Amino acid sequence: MNDYYEITIAGCKRQLKKFAVNDKIDIAAFILFGDVEITEKSAEALLAKLPEFDVILTPEAKSIPLAYEMSRQSGKKYVVARKVMKVYMGNALSVDDQSITTKGMQKLYLGEDDAAELKGKRVVVLDDVISTGGSLNAVVALAEQAGSDIVAKCAVLSEGAVQNLIRH
Image (cartoon, rainbow, N blue to C red):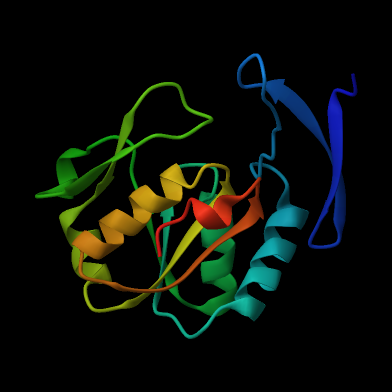
């Protein structure tokens, strides 16, 4: 069995190591952390496809470098939905999140100030990879709770038939 999957992302060729999720499913691990070239080129490619927007909203953690780079290139702010409630977050919004790459149920939180930042704004929901759509849908739910107008949902990679899994 080949332990790697070759892929080209935004013109960058990479060998992604495969990992078993369970007895029947392996995934090729795409990790943005530390890959500046793919982060920069993916940000540029995604921005070229997006409609007008005001804010980028992304879940913690692997997509944060991409959100930062898209923010840097576009001049638009980005907000992070956190995995752990922090004392400074005030009356935070929260949703449950079930991700294929994280064991068990987790929560995502959007601090009071960040929720206010999203209210009435045109928001792009961003993730690094969409596998089942669980994390993306959780971020969408937070954006909806905050009263934002979601104008796009995007990721660098999507796996399988995610079009049927993402709420519209």
